[in-house]
Image (tube, rainbow, N blue to C red; front, top):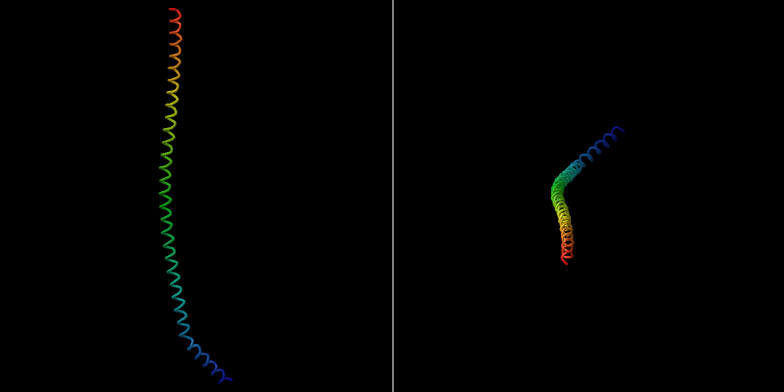
Length: 116
């Protein structure tokens, strides 16, 4: 039994030694694949960060454009309100002038009636 056990152990060790190059090759392959995926992950992170910065820049530009547009809109509304106020004041002035002319006309008619 000891001889048989010794032979089995020797056979097992020889098989393990025969497998060592294959095991080493598998370890190298795993290491290569790991490096490949790590590199891909790093590139994806770089690309994501670049896109994030681009989006931040675009969002900032859009916010600035919106602010400018809003200020322009406010200026137009302000101008329109001023124009409406000016038009209303002009209308009131014209109404007063018409009322004055009507009074003058009534006065002039009375004078003409008195003369006739």
